Length: 113
Length: 217
Image (cartoon, rainbow over all chains, first blue to last red):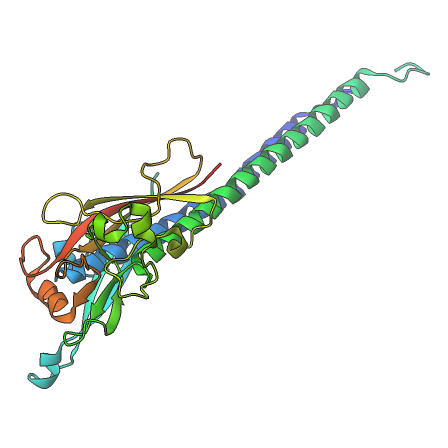
């Protein structure tokens, strides 16, 4: 370093490295913040769609955007299932079967990019 | 640098850098402060809006009542995501909408419908709401009586908005305009044979509600 010269290449490289590391460390946090809102929205949407479908005697197959199970969940960034249990009196009394029938309404969504 | 010389080029440059650094730090802290306050307001609106939306479709003060076949005053359960339509004639309801809202909001006098009051949604005085119903009838849009605003906010900065799927019950019992009770047999019929859109003996109709909440300036 020349006498009286303040800025060296080392200092510049060091500064650049600090900036890059800071950005890399804070990036996952900024993504995390957004996904919380998305999960909350999907929870509300799936339960509201499932309840209205149930009142009309519809299954997940009858409703656009709903799936009857979670087998495709790996395709999505956010996914949620809402499960309703119906008690079928005839199953228990006439057919001697389990009267509790599980009805699943699932939904998956991709994150906005 | 000569002996006795106080101000060198390095000194001036470092002074400039220090001033710039202080300025930058102050600017960043000011922006951070503004962002924090903005986020605080946004978060508050989100939480209050989300709670209000949940109350709208789940609270016993706003939802349909599933009643016993033998006694319609005996409530079996409150039906989440089911709202009774406001079908009472104004003349029987105090003459005006505001009188109608105050008629019997707590149901102490065998009420006919449930007004959607900000109080029931858990909204503080300085918050406003907007409800728009699409569908909920065999044709046209069902009407709900609420003390929310008549139009969506034009200038509000932070608005919580959500689309909700609901069922609107609009079976009017006799001339009373009573729509809030759903008989167990009727619900079973709807589940078995479909909503009122395809089943004449079911009075539950699917509807979409656009619900907005914002803080008044």
